Structure formats: C-alpha cells, structure tokens
Image (tube, rainbow, N blue to C red; front, side, top):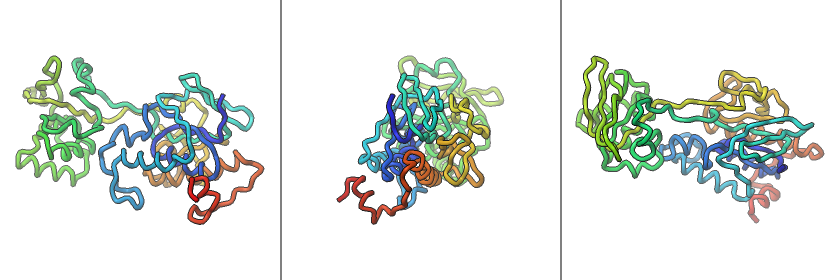
Length: 337
C-alpha cells in the first residue's frame, strides 16, 4: 500500500492544479484517472478547440492548457496512475483507503474528486456497420484536425461541437452538416457564419434527416441519409464525424455514501468538503449554491480545498498563508533560488 497526503481522482485541469496547490504547501499527492493520458475532457473532447476564459491567457487549446499545467507541477514529481479506475473507498480511522481495478492500494487522509462529470463516452451511431470504421474513418472527437484536411467530411449533430467543427474544418475540406431536426442547438453566431458558408457552397446542410447506411469495405466511400418524408440521398464521404453528445457515468462514486444531487456531489463552499470528512469534490462534479461550471471555478475550489487538506495531513502544524511571490519556502519547493 502506498501512503500519500492526498489522493486526487481525475487528471483534468482541475486535478492537475490541485497537485500544484497541494505541492506548494508541502503536501504529496498521487493522481488516478481512467483515461490513458492527463487532460480529462480538455484532451478527450476538444484538444484542438480554443478556450478563451483562462485568466491572462487570451486563447489556448485544451492540449496547450494541459501541457502548461503539467509543466507547472513538474517540481513536485507526482505519480500518475492512468488507465486506472477507483473501485473501492473505505475509511480507516483518519485515513481513506482506495483500491483500483489494477489492484493498486493507496492510503491518505485526503481525497479530492476532480473527475469532471465522471467517466464518459460518446453516444455512438447505432447502425451495425459503423463500428468497423471507428478511429479510422469514423470519429466521435477531433484530436488532430490536420488528419481531416482535403476530405469530404460528413458531420452529424446539431449542438456546439457539430457547428464549431463544421466551421473550422470548412477552411480546408468539403463539409456536409446533417441534423435530425431543422433547428440547431448551437451558438447563434456560429450558426449564422455557417449559413453564410452554405450560401457560397462551402458547407452543405441537410435537415431533417438521419444516417441510413454507410457504403464502403476497407474505407468509407459514401453514406445514405434518409429524410423525414422518406426520401433518401447519397453523399460522397471520406470521413464521418458524429457529435450526438456523451453518456455520463459516475461509476462507483455513486456508491460511496456521498450526498448526491443528480450526477453531482454536494459540497460546502468553505473548503469544498463533502459530507464525508476528508473527501473533497471540485470542478464540474461538485455542486453548491452559485456553482459555475468553469475551469476557473475549479481552480478556486481546489485552492481552498488544499488548505483543509493541509490541516488534516499536518494536524500538529499551523497553516500559514504565504504569497508565492515572496515566500522563500515556496520558491524552494518550486525549484527556484
């Protein structure tokens, strides 16, 4: 069993910043995530998509933000357990014991759940021939937009992801945007820009219709869509992008005895502790009056949670707040002279 000061569940931006806030207070931590890499939803859902609401960073992608956060926590030499899922949590006096599906066992006085919205997976196309093209010619997320250049791309969906990627990929590929309704749910400004591109033939919009079949053996050659009136149409297609949303799964977290509100965990807004002493929740997975689901809010939440983590991990020491600009102790921990 490995002992540490804090176990962080989730390696998204909020979980990574928790490492930093704990580290500058002299606390050790380990990070567990069921994805195969750090970054959480930023990496899984929009690694190439611009983010505009990180303070002092006018624009960055999910991938760029993740890299910067990983660079920021390098001095703390934190261990990551990726492709690993927490299966069991039990209390042992003032500590929490966590076991994973890989049979790893950890003990700590603190647990921070920064798991976003829990485990998630895309809502997949239901037609039987879709699966054989997955990750080659059919995708549920864009991880590297360069692989979609100079292609005939059919995008399914009516929300922000579908509209944003239709607009972005139309810069270098032919786009067909397919939605099962006439009305789109995405941002009005984005839809307005897409309508302009439709008028000049850069984007083709087909509604209300759904995917009927995919044609091709080794690769996709075309698709057949079926309109609500029963008519069908064949569209030449190299790549299918499908954005029908995500299926959210909390998994074992729902069985830990925490106060749940639908698929979120109730916390107090003083230190973001749950109803279980020593278990905290931050980021999209937590809920309290006035909660905003922003990365910025998650950073604030783990900053305050880390103070209570210090008090629990160092009960015989008095917590002393220090500014990072003037604290020699903190600068030494960060490897600065």
